[in-house]
Length: 286
Length: 324
Image 1 (cartoon, chains in turn green, blue):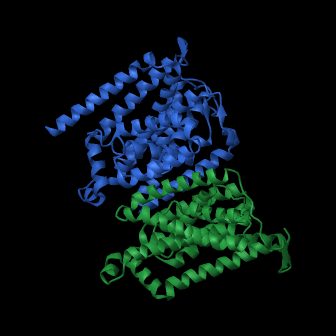
Image 2 (cartoon, chains in turn orange, purple):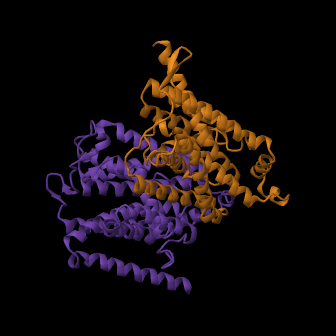
């Protein structure tokens, strides 16, 4: 195997890892803060991608479409939180079911509006550049840069700002922080919108790299969930570990065997790891 | 007194339903009889999910892996596709494998998962991942038909080697056989959940820790009911394979797992009859409404599902009668 094809695989692997973390980080803040398992997260990702598709059909510029994916999915998150999730805070297991129903609804809604076939999004970038001596698509480099920027920004918000401090207080002890005067309800809403918008943006960023079709949400949801459980739900850094392991292993096995074989192997390994260490890599044994 | 009243109401409803089911082929046409045969099979599947979810509180996402595995087992046995096993290809052996293999898988999964601290939401996610693994394997394993599945599966055959062999293909006959099996499954599950074993399950559902302090091995109880549930799902899958004469990845995949959840939620989790009727209701409505509503039907179903989860956790039939 020559050097450049290996480099391309490595870069693709990094790309996958970063996107996975981007999807998973929205999930982990929603789960960590609200204890809501959001099965519809994959469909939020899907909605982001379709926002770009529809923006393109309307003749809007690609970048406007991407910004819209953040805003539109954020608003959809707000609506869903207000209409549904808000009423289920006391019943965490039922939120799985409700968001499951929402995911079916969103998927079908997209099929009705855009049809079941895959859609293609064009990027404004030139095809590829010479990078580190190899030819590599510019857009993939952009997705990496954008993912790193968004992940860093999210970590900054949650680890360095007052909002983040309050959010982490709620994660650590919900009742205590509520007693100390943190408006947990408002916190939940903000978090849910934030997480949804992140999923939407991830979908928007990824849209040119794949055939955008209504069934693809699940393909991102399950790895993202495995990543956050593997990393440990109590810590935001955990998702970086979990995402790297799942995404990295998936890339390696895809290259060595086949994408399908990789998925089977990676999911199996993840299930075994979660079984052996349910508290996650960064979690402490209680 | 109240309990007696409810019990008699249940018996009354049950008798009416059974009577209605028995005379259905006489009043309804062949088409309706054929449809009801299918709905009863889905009903058994719904009951199998309800015994573990409604009565033991274990939300099994990806329950269709057991249904699908049952279907595949029936197929592989009756089509003589298992090496060294080609001599045994009767319906009976098919049923033994279709019930036994999913039950065994459930025991293994149970040992693997229940003994760890994987609980509640984690269990749901891990089951989801396992379901995806099974679907991928079924799609890519060409010996078992791959993406297209396997066709022309032999029908249910009543036989005594060397004496006689009778294929049950006549629709009314098939209907009564499936009705009989469904009734049997219902009565069996009703017995299980109302036995002392069932009481412990109900207690586990309410408060696992307390049951443990009473000295019960909760994991063993969970594994037992999981195996029963998986075996029933496998039985339903085997009937599906024989009646539809087809198995494919769709019957063990995500879609099927979703559908059975919807039937049980709408029918009423925690009532066996509710789950059974939920499957029949949703399927009948689908046959009737999907022509009129086209692709809006699923949207409508999802909406009703969410409403039920939020406001009517006992489903449509759960309020109509209490199962105990």
